Amino acid sequence: MELPQFNPTPGNDSASAADHQLNDSVARIRVLVGDITSLDPSLGIDAIVNAANESLLGGGGVDGAIHRAAGLELRKHNQTLGGCPTGLAKGTPAFGLEKQGIQHIFHTVGPIWPPEDQSEQEQAAMVPGAPIDDSAKLGYTYADTLLASCYMQVFALAVQHNIEHLAIPAISTGVYRFPKPRAARIAFGHAHGHLLRAEIPNKITFVCFSEQDAAYYHDAINTRGQWMVSRGRI
Ligand code: ADP
Image (cartoon, rainbow, N blue to C red):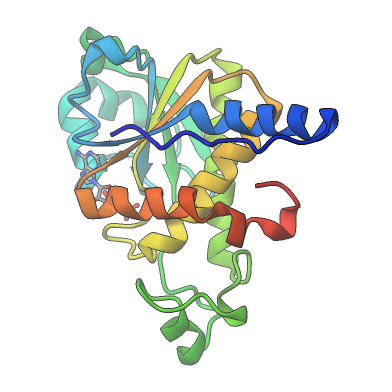
């Protein structure tokens, strides 16, 4: 699914240069609906992210799908890694996924929702569809910080491995129950922030398992002017 293009408004030279930079970094982000283990090789995706658990030995959801596609060699390899704490990431070869052009898997462990430091009232404000009010500001909970850390960690691995095109599922939004609209904002916000500063990876594709999940990303992107204001960059 293609994103609408960002249309910079005419302005003075420095504003236009900033707009151009924003336009460029948003244009390097795509949202696709599909299975991250059977992406079209013509997309040129050379690394995928796994929403793993702390054991790194496989589980349900996208983790199970990636382990099935990569094969037992991945599990054997991961037995040597000693697990991975929540909010961090570790890279491995892609094993059985290499025939699809994927060279690396970056395993990251997202936070479980609801966070322990949150009242029931605050939780109610953060379920999908609830209005985003002050108590629901991004970064308000430790879980936000941990999810943000997952994205920053996988972008650091992408730079380290000189990745051209990175595919990322909606970390923490399945079994770990992170509110999807909130997770989409964190995912897009950090991808956009990284691409503003870095040339690697060249492209980031968010792979969603349903049209509805993709709609949360499109909404996050289309409304970025409202919720990214505090950073001064939209
Ligand atoms: P977590 O434990 O981090 O919540 P899950 O695998 O349960 O991880 O879910 C994370 C997201 O991945 C969910 O939005 C889920 O719908 C999605 N998902 C599950 N299987 C796949 C797949 N094969 N490809 C892409 N996304 C997937």
